[in-house]
Image (cartoon, rainbow over all chains, first blue to last red):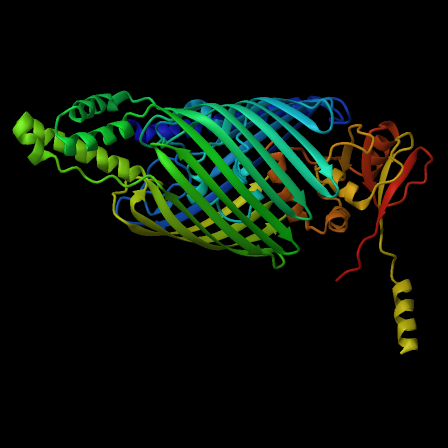
Length: 434
Length: 143
């Protein structure tokens, strides 16, 4: 609790330190390289960053996040939503081997791990021009913008649509194997990946481990149209930790000979006590760039019963006019897991276990129900904005978002209650690459 | 009507000729010519190899070269900002790195002379026998 201010700051500072160290090492190493890259070893250092400021107008106490890994803050003016700095070093050993490391400094939530600022760290092996094998910490290539969602300069809007991207994992500790080939004018890419990652709300609890990830991705690009699809399955492991006593109490209530109470208690127990959850991720995405028009759309389904059955989608369109690209987007996400009804156990329990225990059980049931319902994610949002490419390596973006959050669906927000809400976020960011 | 066309033609000839861009490889490179599409694929990181499957090493002129923006406009139809944005998506997701920039056209000639796997571009047609132009890209007329 008291660590809430120092924790994220410390983590951000460590990320920054790592970024600076990587740059320093890279600059020093680069000084020793002569005409690097001409077939021999070559080091390249590059980076990206975003300076952002947002004004959030939301119900009292609600905090805006672009990712569940971010910390809670209900302040109206926020610089920590989009601001970040990334540094990447590519070290190639001939044309077949490459070492890549990327470090990102940004404000992270209390429960984030120190190692999280290491975004990628892998060795790539290319036996020939078509095949690539990578091992280490790579990206989960299961979503259209997953690879570059921290690189604001690489996309038009201020941030990837939160309805879809806030919940998704980014890094994969494991191995992937990719092949690319041409068929006529179309370029195809296919990838297989295995490994582990993490997922969850880092502001309120320790991340859930996502193990045994097995995924496949295929994409086709021709004349500016990219279509891609991916499917992955995994096992989410949650550490019950402090919720174990509540799970035990619900198990006991579920064994009582009172059908109305028992059935509901079992349902709550199954939801709260789920510790190993099989999950599937399905994705279909497209991006079309033709002349001055850019379109993109994506649908993702996450099934991890009893946690979520989430369907998220967005569509954006932008039109370039000289250095300006105005854009508009709509996105929405729905959880098909039902809202849990608040238990009404006290009257039925009092004759059986006594008034005190009945009141306690009632309070427990109500608390668990509320926390489960408040973790549900169900909202939609409109974005309107413009990107201004004022420099060949920097862009200014102005964006206005209007969110509509359903009752029992505020899971993307911190400090939210279960009521429906509306929010407006006005954002100005400068994205740059170097 | 005819004299007016003639006048336009004369004016066009009087203006300095629009410079073309020359995609050049080592003379020992088995690649005899490149299609425009293949050139785009190579320079934009979509493919890594020449037609025979050998790795291609792609070289670029520096960001501040006065002809670079025109080269990418002629090659891809994209502005420098669009090209940079495109590369940031590939580069920072570890898919591919942009062509390595050399200090100037002299350095480019040096690399092309020495390295049989190199592919680069020049704003003047090279005259030396050790090099081969595999594609000439015409700069489109100004809008």
